[in-house]
Length: 248
Image 1 (tube, helix red, strand yellow):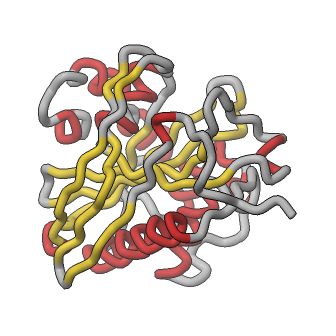
Image 2 (image 1 turned 180 degrees about the horizontal axis):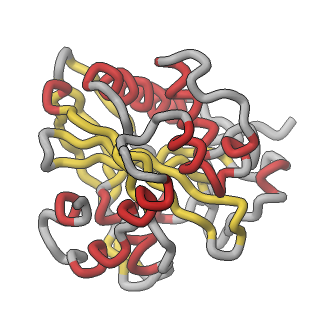
């Protein structure tokens, strides 16, 4: 029987899994990805470890990246903000083998493992805005400090679980948005109901808006316009405070 594995000839940018160690109020995150890109295919892979204080955790953002050639699908991510200066992004992705590409049909057929890429925003956002030339929308989530902390710990728990127990990706039932919905429902059971937009993720930001998960008083159209970070991500691509500068 075909089984998921963490031992395959992985694409270099996905060869290393992250993990998190919790020690009271301190979380050490290992293997935070921070690739330097020259093109989408030419890059230098690097990782670093970093300590985060749970007391400094203030915000969580919901990031949406529409697929330009498949408008019914978007990639979604989370990013956690610590004391307004440090941001840690998490992207749920297929774990590609060398020379492998995403195919939604193959995603139904147990052809990909799933992974949580824990990365620097200059990598995970900058790759998409400045090299893949995707639209990227960063929405502040409507979450209390306690909810943000619980969500972060739940996500890090899944990071550790997948490092120890690999799983297959599924285009519908085990994708980027369904995992985020599951994390939210762990904290607030039933908050994200069964909805086609959790699985066909192109309108996942509209769903989050309707559920009151986004921190805004604006119309959805105005919120979406404000959330687009492409221009700021390009202008500040070399800035040491990239993450704070792309937020308005």
